[in-house]
Length: 330
Image 1 (cartoon, rainbow, N blue to C red):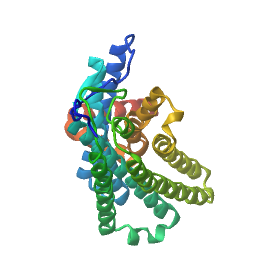
Image 2: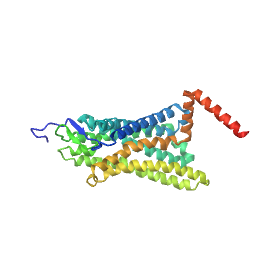
Image 3: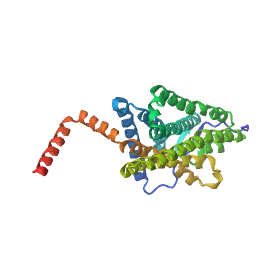
Image 4: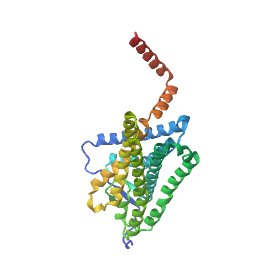
């Protein structure tokens, strides 16, 4: 409870990255560039999937939802993080802090479930190809995605309601982080936070450990099937694709599980920030490359898009290729 001379919490001061004087401009420009790349890459993926009939399949439908999650996820954190980095710190209202934490947690939870659906889709396509079209029809895909979004955004309300019922006192309290995460918020409370911590643990197990376990089992079954592929080139290609997918998933889930399941007393504040950077910046940056830009169908649709918008340059390139081909055959 707040004392007589204390005021209810109204504003927080986010320190961001302290003592970053040398190379601050370079880091700021890099973060801004990364954010623009993440936005451009994911919006391009969404646009290609929506407008290209050849990409209207379950795999790309789930990929479109994954990109949508990452657009929401990064837009919720990175602009404010860049501003804090530029100013050497920044303020955020209490309601804004709770809103940022809610959107961050809900979109992150939805992304975990969408990644699970993508792994299950690949499992059916590779391990049960004869039953794939009958199971993964458009109606089933739509239901699965709707449940993923509802589970992520409605499930978080349990924690948010409990969190808002805690007592917070003071104004202009300093938080040594670059966004409003759960741990810094709980440290500000003068109430017993054990219920919120228990709810968070259960929620992390349902949205983190369980999906991660299902993804690992799906890829183990996929790898066992790939081993039986007679063509060595086919095995290498499948291993390369699935291996990069699994690496991205392990980085994303691994950092989240360390942050929310390992006791925070064993880590410093700076380590927490570095771990947070892995799934707030690096994973959204590499996912468009891993899941999309290496895909031949996505590359073909992108080439078609370039041809539509820049027909003259494409004709010139085609002429140059034709001339070079004629010279090489002479």
